[in-house]
Image 1 (cartoon, protein in one colour):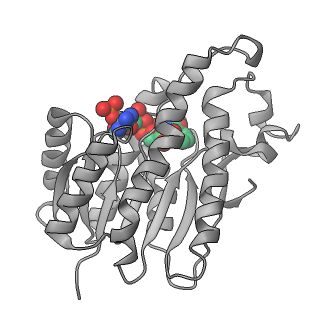
Image 2 (cartoon, helix red, strand yellow):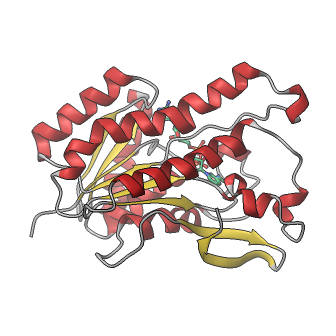
Amino acid sequence: MATTIALITGANKGIGFETARQLGARGVTVLAGARDETRGRQAERALRDALGGGAEARFVPLDVRDAKSAQEAAGWIEREYGRLDILVNNAGIAIRGGPPSETDLDAMREVYETNVFGVILVTNVMLPLLRRAPAARIVNVSSEVGSIASMTDPASPLAQMPAGLAYPSSKSALNMITAMYAKELRDTPIKVNAANPGYTATDLNGHSGFRSVAEGAEASVYLATLPADGPSGILWGHLWTAGGPGDAYGPLPW
Ligand SMILES: NC(=O)c1ccc[n+]([C@@H]2O[C@H](COP(=O)([O-])OP(=O)(O)OC[C@H]3O[C@@H](n4cnc5c(N)ncnc54)[C@H](OP(=O)(O)O)[C@@H]3O)[C@@H](O)[C@H]2O)c1
């Protein structure tokens, strides 16, 4: 049987690196997208060491904000493999922009360029390759802070977080984007879902998260490897609820 080919954006560190490692451990050929050549090559070496030759790991130069970079990555994947089975839109940034009333529009634009427009750009450039796979999976790495239901539930610890616009609303937009791709592609074998890693210790939050990257990557790996009868157009993962940090894993409210 042909090997499964997965592209993970922002795979040089954090949850993206761990997602690549976990997929590689399942025998998937992992294409580790990174915008910086040195960091990408380092990740490629670290992935190959971690996988011990069991599965292939290759660095792909990919800045999700740069159309030329995305097209070159797609051209390279097409020449090397002719298709793409899994796309994990993992690259993301967080900027603390203060309360809504003081939001800097440049900060909003900066976050949306990566977390929203970057996902649309990469998905649309990769879709012809994903359509050539027998049953492709697209995973958009979202967040529980993009869940309007959770963020406004008075019983949720998330509702106690200070109000901010840029990052949470970028993930709410990503949730709707996920639902709309799932709708467009519902008559195809392609499944499109959003993953919530939960609050995970990475550079994104100065390692203040209470989950490990192994836990954080779990939702992406689950959605990337869904069987034919699995869902499409859902948000899935770890939710921080009133019961404690580790008490909910599964389908989550939008
Ligand atoms: N950590 C959490 O608690 C948490 C919770 C929910 C959701 N998430 C989401 O999980 C995803 C991964 O975050 P993380 O926590 O692993 O953060 P991280 O350790 O900061 O990793 C972010 C990754 O995205 C890459 N990236 C940023 N801008 C990029 C661009 N323009 N093109 C390509 N790659 C780019 C970074 O590359 P460089 O090294 O070049 O900057 C890095 O590899 C993000 O979408 C984030 O929003 C995280």
